[in-house]
Length: 113
Length: 110
Image (tube, rainbow over all chains, first blue to last red; front, top):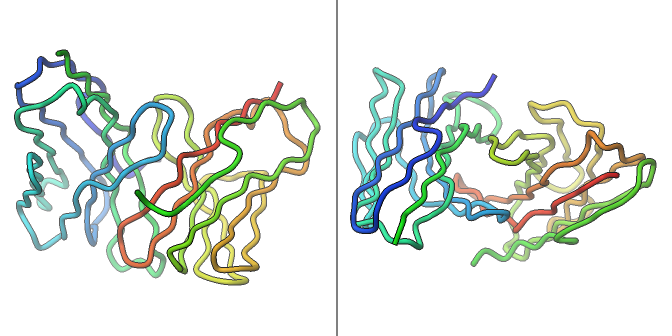
């Protein structure tokens, strides 16, 4: 079963609005990452937050992590049409000998111009 | 842009054919991965490698095989393709914790 589940599955907003996506996971993690995927393309790394961090910023992106609830959220502020893509969270398991990322189910974001 | 390349970009073949999906990276990364992704779904890890001559199966069982003879090259082979293999195959590499992905190969088996 997948490690991460994302909510909502799909989100449609107007340009200029903020978009919030949530990710829940099951096991203890070392870090959590967010990736973006344009339709039919590979994924692009956006931001990484470690298990001992609670919040991180990168440009218009803000990520929070609550390890007690095993959840994370990605906020995109002042969205643009170019932000239209699928967004995935991915977790690196704590204590694992391997360096494998487990991906969530993704949120499809559509930003209307 | 990450320096990781996948070819072909699209492949449509008949059942029973042998195929090889190519993945190369010029970043000198030791760790490489193959993920399988169906439309609108999550990525599933099918193979990974920690370096030359190292290959391991991922979390999702796959009939494909991989090899790692050179650091920069991590090809995936299907000996006899079937319609159930139709999917997008994504190659990735890393030297730390962040994955760099290729553009993917969209495979359709008729």
